[in-house]
Amino acid sequence: MKTLKFSKERTEADITQLRKTVSDIIGNIIKNGDEALISYNEQFDKCDRSMIKVTADEIAEAYRNVSQNDVEDMKRAAANIRYFSEAQRATLKPLENVSPEEGIMLGHRIIPVDSCCCYVPGGGYPLYSTALMLAIPAKVAGVERVAACSPMMKGTNKIHPKTLVAMDIAGVDEIYAVGGAQAIAAFSYGTEQIKDVSLIVGPGNSFVAEAKRQCYGKIGIDFVAGPSEVLIIADGTADPEIIAADILAQSEHDKEAKGLLVTIDKAIGEKVIAAVEKQLELLETKEKAGESWGNYGEVLLADSLDEAIAFANAYAPEHMEVNVREEDIEYVSGKLRNYGSLFIGENTAEVFGDYASGTNHTLPTMGAAKYTGGVWVGSFLKTCTYQYMSVSAMKNIAPLVSTLARGEGLIAHARAAEIRKEKNNDK
Image (cartoon, rainbow, N blue to C red; front, side, top):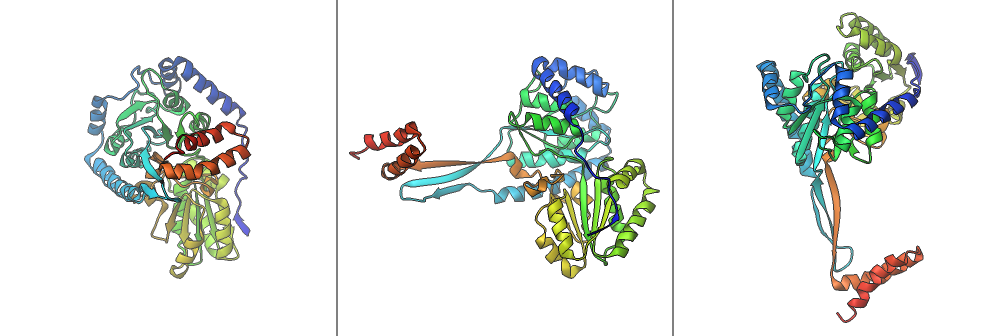
């Protein structure tokens, strides 16, 4: 593997101070509840609202401040997301009447979590699409209480109107004007105004990610997400301008986002580098995208598609694009196994998945795709087993369990099996 454009090496930052700051915030929320939440809102967002829950009047006002075309666009995207979530839900079925031995009946139930919080970022951009991506699968899963939160627009008491409208379209039951690590703490431990939840999902900045990490165990989380990333595998048939556009789309997320091309054609790699620089000049977000591309953008030259595939599987990117000739698409796609979401062929832009095709855009980053996929309807469901035994089945298995338990030195375990057999000897 050769490097055509080098990336700044991503080192483990000193997170000692971050961890302490977040720990202090969580402790303050646990101790002082809403008083601490309101104080943090004022400190970080210059917001002085005392009621954290968003009212129906605020939601109605948001609709008045969003164009009808925007509302219809959100509804169309929501319909696709809902359609795919419902299709996914249909694949998850209860398991009944499994009998490894006569008289033993085993199974599992698919049970939604009681409640969840959908964290919708609102820092650099109003990421209202995330509201659709989080809340719709939660509602399809059957979560009884779907809450959502988002930071206010700086210097105001309001969440961005598009974000509020998207939350409403997605079917959110409760909306709260709060963000940051303090929001994660509030939904984990509860305050006077916010009832705690079972699960928190959604991306956020480093403080949000660290708070999710520290609160995990008290609540469930989807995963701890880092900077956004895309990895593109391309051959000599790829269009360098299209690849450059996809890299920049990822790069404008934040200054630490990563756009990575692995190609088997040196000329394509060089043309992509030139195309990125050219497109940057016309980009309104060029300051952020340019810094991201300059520091973390990378173009690698592989000897073969197999080498490119092996690199991609080891990297495990959030977004994985396959941009090769038609006859190689199935081979390359079939060999890839570690990615958050896969985009197959030149027509399939990663940004389509970001907004409207129907798959979810809340995906694992920084190698987490080696062990997990993204948020989906199953993120809000528990697979819980059950079992039933007849008297004869109990009498048959009790001696085996007794022997195994005594072998571990757990005598009370053994007696719990033996006493049942003893009490049913005459049956």
